[in-house]
Image (cartoon, rainbow, N blue to C red):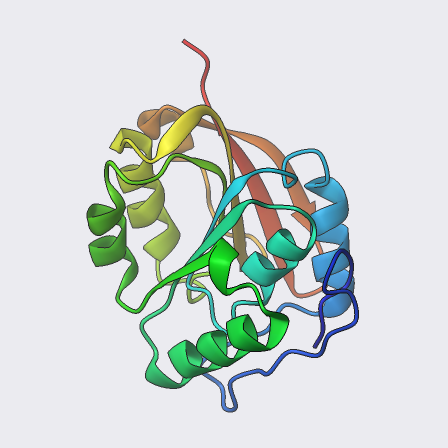
Length: 185
């Protein structure tokens, strides 16, 4: 696993051993960032369920002004810290070593995110809880793009009740990315 493009291009990143995390493959990450290329430069980027931190670090390498990571798995937290130090992105990153809902509440009034990426455990419904919270929080701008990495066939039929809409669904062999926006009033 490595940074694909930008100022830290080709730098290798550490990953967490074991089955608790599923690192996004370089091919999928490249496709994702090709789709995000207009949103990332200068953005405030939130990486939830961050694992190794590779998505947020890729965003900083490609010009995001800040990447905020949230992770509660002890080994993954250590991995993110090592990857931040190795890429020398300490000034452009912030790590919340806690569960996602606690971290989101702690961030209220401190950030307004341009892009929110989340890769929660598959088929546990955690994305619904997080999207419900975010839709009512002060953490989003009117134009914030939310991206959820999920198992194939994950149901997003509930978005309308949160004032959100599915902009695009990109499917891969083993998973999918849902691109979600706030409904315009």
